Image (cartoon, rainbow, N blue to C red; front, side, top):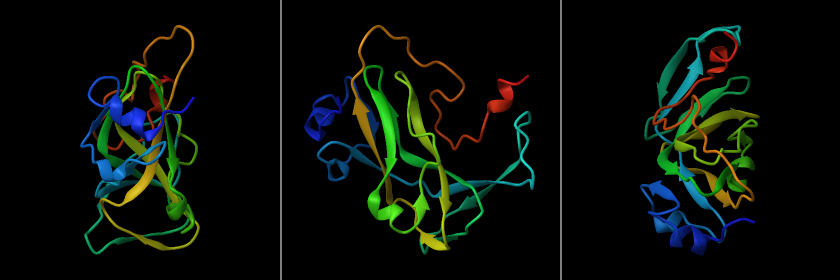
Length: 171
C-alpha cells in the first residue's frame, strides 16, 4: 500500500525523515522533491563499467541552464530523506515529463533503510531550460510485508550527487 500525504506527515520525524520538510510540497499520496543547483556530467566519451569514470560539475544559475539531448545529467534532490520502515519510490512529476525531461532513467526504487539525497539520472528529448530548486520529482512510500534487512550498501547516506559505483562490484 502507498502512504497518503496525511500518513507521510503523521510519521515525519519518527518513521520518515525529510530534511527540509515543506508542507507546500506534500501531495495527496506523495511528497515533491526539489532539484539542487548542481549537475554532474561524465567527462569521457566512452564510459567503462569497470572504472570510476571522470565527471565535471555544472552549477545551474538562477537564470537557468539548458539541458541538451544525448547527454546524461546527474543531479540530486535538495532534501535528505531517510526511512527504515517504508520502501521509498521516486517518480518524475507529470509537468516535468510533459516538457520531455526524464528525471530517473530507471533507478526509481529505493531500498528500505536507504537514506540521503536522491541522485537523479536526467535526460531530455529536446533542449529545455531548467532552474535550481524546482520541484522536479515526487517520492512516495510503500509498506513492506515480512521480515527484511535494512539497506547498508555503497550509496547509503549520501549528501552529494553519486555517479555510478558499479565498478566496486566488478573488481
